[in-house]
Length: 207
Image (cartoon, rainbow, N blue to C red; front, side, top):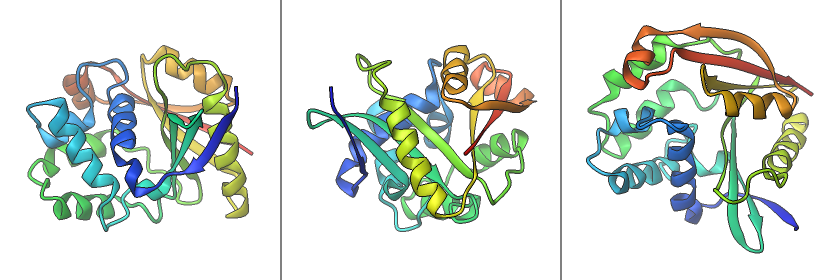
């Protein structure tokens, strides 16, 4: 089974929105985007995430930060890698304003600030590393990661970091299997109140 890795295009927005929502919920009822958009349906939430991926302000969800894995022409996985010095909190807020969804910005910022790890700008951030159901354990995420690290090396990066929810054991195990090591944990009451998980784990991968 051949896995093809390619850069995402703007027309991949519907697939990327699915992967972003799947990743943010991480087997919970709601995730950060449900809170942010306060949508009445998944369809509405997905539409708003799609708009984020193609906004002029290149936020961290922007399609240009994504790689997509394909098997037989079907999109089966995604990986977002972004530079925190470029995809800043301010850029994200600009894109929310651009798509007319900045009414819940305060809630979003409060959650973000309560679980902030103060990331080093010289690290690359991995996010939304996901695969669709039925394609687990066929090397999709490993292939996406290898391709992303290749590009990261050319840009001078040597450390990639990612965040996983405390209690998300399966995801945590998978990241460790890929070579990530736990750096620190941050428990946040607000996060627990909103999502039922105690907080976040910061992971790092040196390459």
